[in-house]
Image: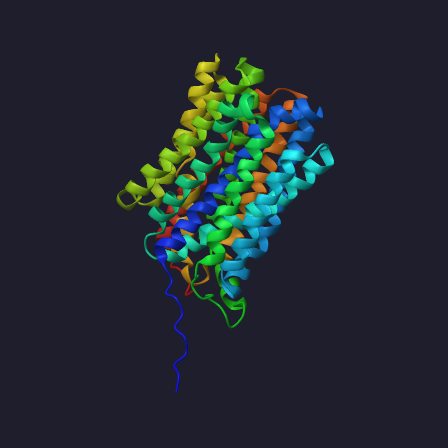
Length: 396
């Protein structure tokens, strides 16, 4: 009598590395439009409203994926969902490199949003599941690799654009997208958490918890912050303060680098500070930095505001996710799906609205949006701290 073949054990370390690779590529996704906008203005003669429309479309595509990814990974697992997402991202970078018309750029951006949304949601939910009880530190650590990816594309453009051109840089980005694809296809993932079917009762239970919705709207405003700043800082520095394209790209890289450094620091201190004080302190710093960015009298001060803004933004998103992930561990994919859907609505509206304001008035006024958003986050975080103390977690 022969025994059934043993399955390979799940390697937490290798799965974590694959998530790091996936979120690194998602960082490139999030930074690429802002980094290549000046080139698109020159190449396709588009205006700021059309550029804002690209952000809107990419984020709408992410929104669609965010709406269904959670139930899918809870029911079927992570493996093939993440692999398909990485493939879409790689293909879209290639199309961005060669698209000769605005219509094909639109197609590339939509595909980019679909794949990027899957990588974002899937890797965050995977890391949350791999680190029960340590979500705050683990998700901030994941965010470091997001920041590293977001830093990479403006850095490459700033250093290599004159030498090898934008097309080759985007093909390098496409090659980077194949790395997590291969990792996802070759690694063994944990079994699906809800293989028997989607748990409607549990989904209704978490949807009735006020903590979920306060977290969701903090992420709504924070996504608007990160997408707006990442999308428009380079153009603002060039048009508003006379920086060269290369200098503005370096500042944008510094902004993403500050996010990366801040998340590394957050992963180290969140266990001592707790989630709520860390987010509140970060939001206060972000409010001051956003004010400096728009009120800056010179390019030097504006660059300083951008760097401080990245540092302030760093911990808000992953630490808020961790607060929800700790609460809804057995159905984390579905909880994250709700959170990302609301969050990306803010990310979709923010840069688009900034573009409309820039067209009718000025980009400086358009970048007042993060100031308003940071004030809203501060108020919501105070309420979240109180709700966390008063409400008991649902049995999910």
